[in-house]
Image (cartoon, rainbow, N blue to C red):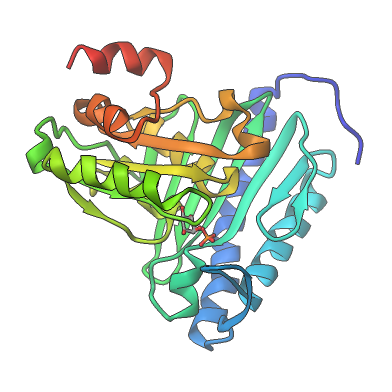
Length: 280
Ligand code: LIP
């Protein structure tokens, strides 16, 4: 695969990638829903403790990888199941986010697709085909669900906040329990849906007031972080901290509770949001 010199993709290039991103999120959703409906998505393996793999994960990722290679052969690809190489222009894909739910026939899962150019997420798509909820964002053009604009919640009172704290065994249990305890002691209602991408999309839509997780991979979170930014929320500096290659802590919140979430989880907010949140 050729690695192009760092260059900024022009608007026409982004337009073309947006069209593909929108279309393949839906076509990949049809592949996922077929597996879910025929129960072909039954668990076929374990990548590790509590880390499930289904046949549909592989089928969806191959579907996306082949569509991207056909349309933009010079773009790089990074997928949860097949890996990939980092490049200036790169698609970052989780074929089924919420695999543990998918494998147990719980319709809380999604396809998550992000397009990153020169270290900045430009496009993000998250699609739950089981309930036909399609989220999309393009940097600078807002966020939408099924074609309608979405905005984060205006919650400022922590005792009225409903937040999600993601979990995986990539983080020591003591750290997770400490963050959970602090969030509860601050008065928030804390949920866990086992799909980080949908958890972030729900923040962008105002269904949830914040999503935090002490470690996520890039494919789990990049699309959702752009959705929250474009919907008026505050986020952490995930990509600035080598998140594309190594993953890291994720925080996304309604502005009114971003500062509290950051203090409770120890995950910092990106600079502009940090200054604002400290004033709250
Ligand atoms: C999921 C992540 C989520 C985490 C889950 C799981 P997967 O990814 O999106 O953040 O809390 O435990 O790892 O494995 O379903 O694609």
